[in-house]
Length: 156
Image 1 (tube, rainbow, N blue to C red):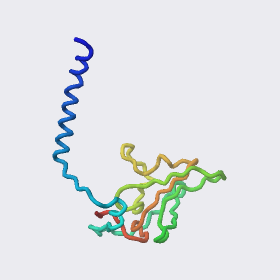
Image 2 (tube, rainbow, N blue to C red):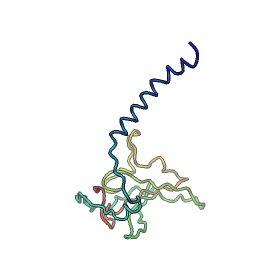
Image 3 (spheres, rainbow, N blue to C red):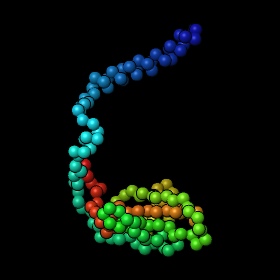
């Protein structure tokens, strides 16, 4: 069997499958085409909070002083809490910095999560970046940890 026939036999099934798949999706696609740009749609969109059950009453716990300081950082709404690694005593130079944005419900306060060892398969504490040659900041956001603003986790 010559090379051209062998190549065609290997490629033909994939080619036929691809054409059928594309045809099926294009026939069943029900796409609304709008007469506005994404920017225009964004301008008229208003977020709707669908669940306002978050309790914003607990400030961040004080961490061990050698691990984190509790600080406040300025925002348009007012000062908000964050954990910040302490500056090294013998360093005068600027250091690289990491801002660790944690996920989940409840901000950074209410427990010792960020300075307690966590399972390596699900460590979301940023502990990898707690290094004397680096600055680590873990901020909380509006509406969390008694910060000003409204907590906006449940929205559409």
